[in-house]
Length: 256
Image 1: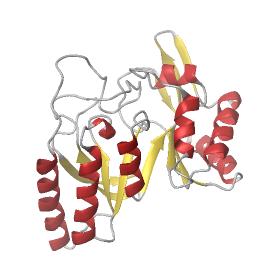
Image 2 (image 1 turned 180 degrees about the vertical axis):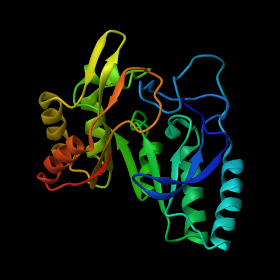
Image 3 (image 1 turned 120 degrees about the vertical axis):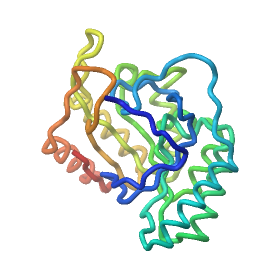
């Protein structure tokens, strides 16, 4: 069963990729808001309807300060503050200002914690989003396939999306970004889906070489998905892909 996060600040949770993570959800609590409609999203489908309201900057920062102060006082500070939640955080109209505020709070209350953003990279055309992502320790940018057709099958973008354009913007980070890729197999609406084929992986590796990111995260399905008939990729296969990334001179982590 897919679920939504029910608060602005959530967790902490033990992230497979990031450690003890305190989540920051800039998106509405009553629905998912995203520029993708991924068939594997733990938050369920992106639905239409009335335009939801974003959380305001003051509420986000006040709740984070309260929670972070309590965690530090208890001697259990988080390893990371992670922008995630019910959709795509960079869609928030004041994303850059909120990132500035979060970094400032981190520096004052919990200087050893990292600030991470999980983003599908669809908003990199906005300079304010790129500036914000360059402020954080871990700008984690999604790239699920080298092929536009496969992205349409897996991620189902709700607007214009071009792998070539997104990769070009990722390259502008000068090796500071982290690329995150979900590998999966299955079938949805009579279409066979598999981004683990040799054609898929070889083309994806070429783009990783072009982007030259600081590191790559490869993972597979871990929770319920809105689309049925999706299959988890065995960890041995993920490790084999990771070895091919490392052969390019790029660090790669695996979460099976």
